[in-house]
Amino acid sequence: MRLMKKGNIGNVQSFIMAIVGVAVMLAVGLIVLSELQISARVGGVAGNTTGTTVASNATGTIITRMATIPTWIGILITVALAFIVLGYFYMR
Image (cartoon, rainbow, N blue to C red):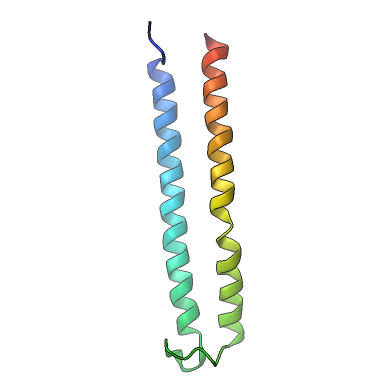
């Protein structure tokens, strides 16, 4: 008795690859924004933590908001996997 059909495995693989792609893009985006925040400080000196600019503060706010995205990715993974499992039992 086969538990999963070939089409279902393909769906799972494409879903996992999409999640990995989003995670990589998120990581690269956060790294770039972090470097941008450091360079936006007064004088562009990385060790200068006392002098900040409006751009540095705005970039910090964006980084903080983007840091909540992994929570939503976890919820999306759970919902998508539930749909895949329910789809398997429905088509059975």
